[in-house]
Length: 92
Image (cartoon, rainbow, N blue to C red; front, side):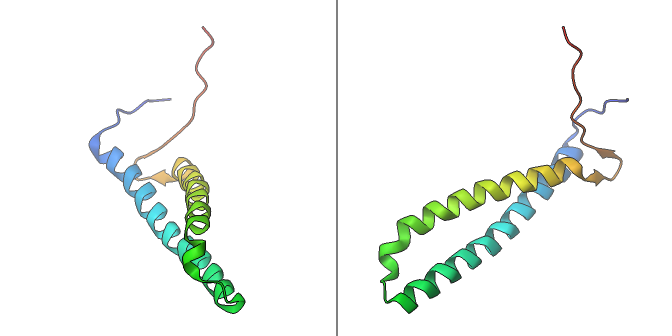
């Protein structure tokens, strides 16, 4: 196996994949969570202000979980000219 140097071009490709998928997914997840909680609060007659802290906690947990999926997809992707591999090091 030939190991490549992490050139800035390669780093930017991987970073961009992680960044845009994370932002796009977070927007969608945030909209879904916000819509569900907002609609539920409206139908139950609960002021949305009382739910801001719990909503933020759920949103942070969802974002952390989503980031794990994004990093996993970055590790599985074949980029132009390279891919990322997790290789076991020889036991010392």
